Length: 125
Image (cartoon, rainbow, N blue to C red):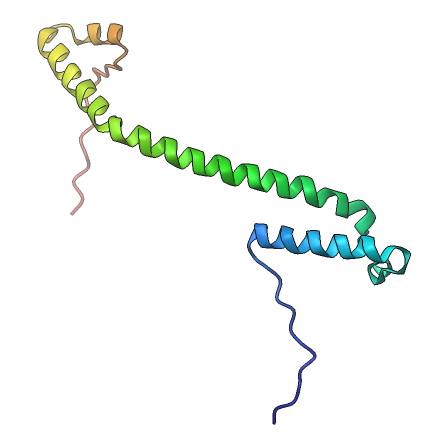
């Protein structure tokens, strides 16, 4: 038979699980009251930090919900984005052909017209 170890404590890495654990610890600390062994801590105080757990957990849940909503909105955006990009590109080509002698007119439509000459790429061999 193997010998027993003193036990390894596994702390959650996931914020939601950590906040759940903190909630349980704080509740037990409150139930124990003056007899709570956690009052022996020198650098930390559950009376100060404990009340922060609930709002922290609430903010985490709101952030998770916002992330889900953002993901849905991005998916909806991505449905129409290719068509929008295509019509913008096509409009630029049409306007450039119409105003071939004066492409700066495209600026009136919101396009950025760069008429400077492109620098030649250095020949690296």
